[in-house]
Structures are given as structure tokens and as C-alpha cells.
Length: 391
Ligand SMILES: *Cc1c(COP(=O)(O)O)cnc(C)c1O
Image 1 (cartoon, protein in one colour):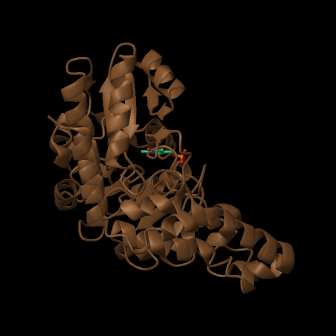
Image 2 (image 1 turned 30 degrees about the horizontal axis):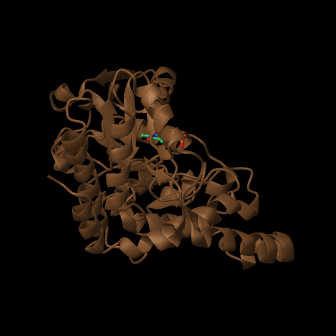
């Protein structure tokens, strides 16, 4: 039997407890959507106000050079690199995840151009599949999508590129990056990892596990704000073979030479395309900077503690009312838990009325996200009591 007191005790022993104070979260709500739109860091408003008033407002165009705007997508990229196990200059921030997927898939297909197949899974996030499909169609390749359970046996010498999400957006299942990359690498397959649901929620080791490309959202666990610009990683072992499909002037070696011919900047920098959105980058920088002194092992253990508490409380309090759609084994589970119920939509609507905010995914899933930096175990207790009341 888990008690309310147990939850209070878990919070007292939480090394990340003080981070909650770094966010502005309305007192009256229980927020379970940090995996979809992260909360507002307290520093964001002041940082944006500074950039707007003291840089844009006072220095106008000089800010590109004098206030570091030109370097900002690389500076923030380097901060994200530390969270995903990448080296300096392997990560830049630009555009949306969808567009970065396009750049990464195209680049990988071009490097492995003597092969014909782009492989992904049936349950991958829709935009990932759409991007893979349009590249396959336009470059005379074949997109093959398979179920998770036959993924490893589908890795063969015809496959040019394997596109996977690290943590599944619906089920929360973690794909084993180390093992999959090892097999892919042996067969000459390049890997692209979508880290949207793992960056900021767990340690990611792109270099150690030999990933070729990666992309990810920053408005989820990195708290960059609605529609915050995405990041893209290219392993620097490919630097002399990278070929962006979107050669924009910001990815040129010397943008301010206004050269009529395109010469790409080195490495991942060529994935900068058009002029960087400095206000969005400023908000993102505020979210990412909060991770500066955070131990990602603490983040992961708290995430596991929160999701496990939720699963155990659901089983204790409303046993058999829901099907737990996420892995029961915490090693295989990311930082959200999905419950299946035939009246999921109605239950979600009623939860929102009671200020518990998860999200509904058709046709029958309620998804609860657990942001380790600002959620506490007592939030989980309170929410499960309300879920039980509603059910
Ligand atoms: C959230 C999410 C996206 C969103 O892409 P945008 O272009 O930023 O809208 C893409 N892929 C995955 C796996 C996601 O979870």
C-alpha cells in the first residue's frame, strides 16, 4: 500500500526538488503535459525583455554582430550537445523538427546513395513518416515501415537509413539506441534518432552509441516555449560528406560575402538555413540553461520514480479500470505513461475541468507526462485521487 505520506517522503528525498521554484506554474493546476509543452522558466521573460529592449530596441541591426545573435544558434546548440552526448559544433538549432528531419534523412540517404531503402517503424510520429515518404518518392527510394517486433530482423544490406524515435510518442517505449546502432553499423546502415521525447528527460549518448544523425523538439522537456526552434545533430565523422537539401545563406561558409555560389559551412552549421529567430532562440536558451547544473542521472531516476509511482497508484486505486499502454518495466519506459480506456476523451475532458492536465490521443489513449524538473510525487498522488473520483 502506497500512502500519501510515502509520496511526501519521496519529495523530501528528491535532489531536484528546488528546481520547481525555477518555473512559473499556476498553483491550482496539476500539469501532466510537460512532454508536449514544457512549463515557463522564470528567467524566460526577463531574458526576452532584455533582448527586445536592450538589444533589438537599442542596438538594432548591430546586435547581429555585437550582441552575439549570429552565434546564438551554435551556442544554444552546444548547450544541447552536452545533454545528448555530442561534441562541440555537432549540434545547431534551427527550424522545426519536421524540417530538420527532412535535412537529416536527405543527408543520410545521399551518403548511402548506393542503397535503396529508408526503414522506419509503423508507430513512428506522423511527421517523421511524412518526411521519409516524400524523400523516398523524390529520390527514387523505397520507404519500408515495420512493426517494432521485427525491426532488428529488417536491418539488412538494402537499408540505407534507419529512422527511429528514441522514446515512442504514444506508448513511451524506449528504443535501445546502443544495441540498434551496433547492429545497424555492422550492416552499413546510417541511423537517425528523433529525440523529441527523450532530450531533457534522460541521458542520451549519441557519440558513445555511434549515432549518425539526430533531431529533437525543444518545447517539450527543454522548456523552450511554444514552437521553439528544433535541434539537429550530425556526427562529425560525416563532416566531409554532408549535403544539406536546403542550402540557405545562413548555412553558407561566409554568409556576409553574399556569394552567388553556395559553399556550405563546415559540419552541422550548414543545417542553418535562413535567418535565425532570435526571440525564439532566446526563450529556448533560458530553458536549456536551466540544465547547466543538473545531473541527468538524477533526472532519469526521478522520471522513473514518478512514472513508477503513477503506474503503481493506478493499479492500487483504480485497478482494472485502465489498460496501461506503456511498458510496465521502467527500464523500457520514457517519461510519460499512457492509459487506455474506451471513454478516454470524456475522462480527459473531466480531468481538465478538475485542473488535471494530461492529453488525449485518439481513439482511446490518455497520456500523462512527467517532467522531472518541476513535478513532485505528491502531484501524482493528488492526480490519481482525482482520476479515481472521475472514473
Ligand atoms: C513533438 C514531435 C515532433 C514535432 O515536430 P515539429 O516539427 O516541431 O512540430 C516530431 N517528432 C516527434 C517524435 C515528436 O514527438
